[in-house]
Amino acid sequence: MRGYRLARGALFALDAERSHELTIALLSRHPALASAVAGRLVHDPVRLMGLEFRNRVGLAAGLDKNGEAIEAFDRMGFGFIEVGTVTPRPQPGNARPRLFRLPEASALINRFGFNNQGVDALVKRAACARRHAVLGINIGKNADTPIENAVNDYLLCLQKVYAVADYITINISSPNTKGLRDLQQSQLFDQLLEKIAEARESLMQRHGKRRPLLVKIAPDVDAEQLTAIAEATRRHGIDGLIATNTTISRVGVEQLQHAQEAGGLSGAPLRERATEVIRQLRERLGPDYPLIGVGGLLSASDAAARYEAGADLVQIYTGLIYRGPQLVADSARALQLAAKRRAAAQSWVI
Image 1 (cartoon, helix red, strand yellow):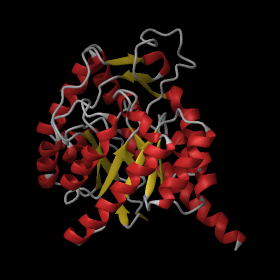
Image 2 (image 1 turned 60 degrees about the vertical axis):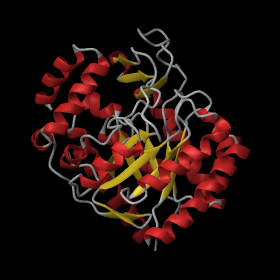
Image 3 (image 1 turned 60 degrees about the horizontal axis):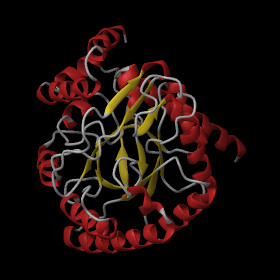
């Protein structure tokens, strides 16, 4: 951890996005470096959605948008790696600056806007990446695609990533693409999932494999919306939910520098709300529906608490930036212990 604190000091002296770019470039060229800074790999196999995860901790989408450092993150000890968000065509995203640190709150604000090199570039990298971890690909729509045509972008991405992804995430929850969150509204959500589920059936026949589909949702939804989301995902055979994306709320950070920048807030201020969304989804969906918890995970105890709230797996992003690669192994061990405690308690009851 001391080694990472020194590295973080140097990286935090740079512009936030420049630091991000340099880190991804370094890991891409020298993936073995990840092994040197990671904790000991935690083997805690868990089967979910027909996939075998080597442990319960994943990399959240957004950190490696173009799949440039898959091998490095694999060596870092993640049980699964989610890359993207990727769109059909390359796009530059929003104007810089668009990434801001709030170190006093262990938080970030970003308004990237799905900047990426396009789905074809990502698929090419994913196809040749050496890895043991499960690979998820997170897909979205181009910024200039009208919301009424958004389904076409998702279907194109789904078709192109299907052969190389272990699972596919439908991102309808970023606050940084105009109108995207409208797709969480019940009628549009229902229509989108219906088309995607139909396309998956066709792709499954063509490839002879069934890829799990997940939907990533926002924390800024009310109880009625959560109920509608839960019912629609069940109805259309969606395999799991990821909760949550970043928040547009600024509660708890209002007075900090950069707090009023537009974009999504991640990190510690999101912890309570993201945990509550997982808890409410578990209540609505029952004990067996796959849920992945993300948002505000900065310690092993945070990971364990998300598991207790109902998450089967967790993902980290901002915590990795503030706490370093050791957080992966620490969180995986905490989840392994939490799962053992739950299993022991259940066997005692039986």
